[in-house]
Length: 259
Image (cartoon, rainbow, N blue to C red):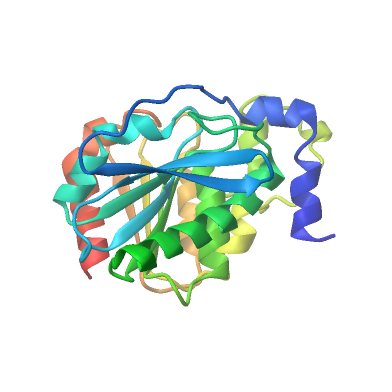
């Protein structure tokens, strides 16, 4: 069975409703940011927001967490800019101002189209070709997917609060394991990250009650590179990681993108 078939199996309505929590919210882009609308299917568009520091700065393509939208980064984007990075944040179908309905297979397929447009925007705007991909929580699926396909074009992979196993995550959240259509305990992130040879930074909360730290350790141990770092934010949980460890967090990102 191919990965694409596996992804389609995860599109069963009861599974999609359990995974995705789309939020329809959108604000006007603040100064030094621009919105881009990317067509991923006829009549279906994804809205992305580009927070720009400088055309000479490296750029990070970020796939955000489940309960987030691009406008949530209006206050965080400028901090990325302060540490020398441009930040390009992508929504999912049905999130923010994006159209359509979310699904697992479309999320993965859309990531490739978003990446292609991201690359074109950098090229057309005369930006530096130094590109990184980052995924937070649910977004780790898209980030690892791209890192496993385009590592010759990327400088590095950043995973924040990512999970190694869909099976372990879903059962932990209360979904009956006997109803899961995927039985591979490493699908998709753990199995894919083994083929990633990019420099990799993994950031995780010490007391993450949603995605336990052991999943970050699994990703760290199995990524196919020696150029890797695991940063654990002490006393932090899934949703307060940034607040509790902001200085450590952005110092690690700054060091990673300038290495």
